Length: 432
Image (cartoon, rainbow, N blue to C red; front, side, top):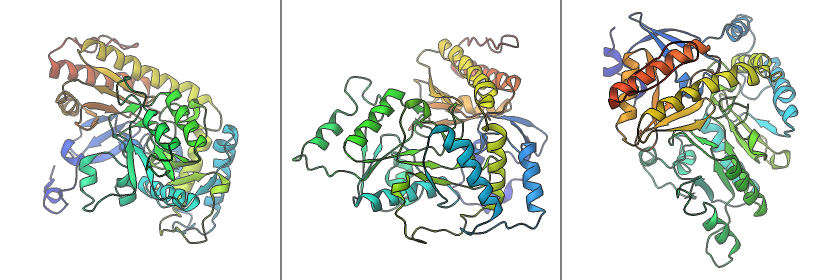
């Protein structure tokens, strides 16, 4: 494989290609094939942009039919049949069954676009400028999104001070020794605290990049109640945790509250095509026409695959309660077995946004590298890359999930020198 052009012409900013130094030529389902013929199980899924795997045949068929029909591909915010079908399907299949009354905004094609739109809207609605976000949060790479991100390396790349935002403790930041909301509740109620009321609080229900930390559902509900009490808008960043990754379409569904604003991207198109939504309560729709626009809001092929995805997987609860629930049980069952074999290891996350945390911060990176050598794509997460982060396709067959978990178990055994017990339901002992 000739990789010279990537190292001589492409910027030093590249990262994933350093972890996985191969050239991928084919991708189908949960498998990618390299130029030399090596097959890799994909437990990365395009950082969560490929929840339904690579080139799902039903979505591929809809896409091919559309792009060969001479229908509009690029349309900014003009009206097209593809956009109409998506909006109607999203309303009928996702919003109405969940009792959600949201306006849908197309802010631009990426996750950071929807976050920027949400922050801008919150400030416009409230007339306040400050935003609160959480320790270890990640919300994107543009300046507004970086201002509410916790990662110091990402923030440093901005090159200027990141202002109008403060960080507050995420769930269990004090290991249960101090109530997380104690300080915030006190200063909001104290007129002499000197702390201005924020426009909004933005939260990830599961911090994907921040170490696969999953907030307790009761903590999320308490946050929602606090925001409601003090008339602070609550923004849920569901860019990575949404579209089914935690087991329900939106990651906040089981927590029993309704956010004021929701950021959606990554797998909303179903096919890995760029697309993002900002959802908000109708009374927050105070935009002037053209006040927040962008050239690539109208990606009609993405509307087409998104519509096909919603109809195929979310028109009823059969996928959620069937294949998806089984996949989650398979992965978490394996993770619990592996973690129980290694001192200081623990399982993190929710649904198929899951992780293995190691007390030794060197372990996760070595396990990821060893897994790659044995045909599995899996990344690390957390401030010190101390968590092995798993994001397999929601549609991955059980045998592939078990094979991938077997590769991880063997890698953990090799790296830690520990006897790792993993017994898949359908096979023999994977690592010992």
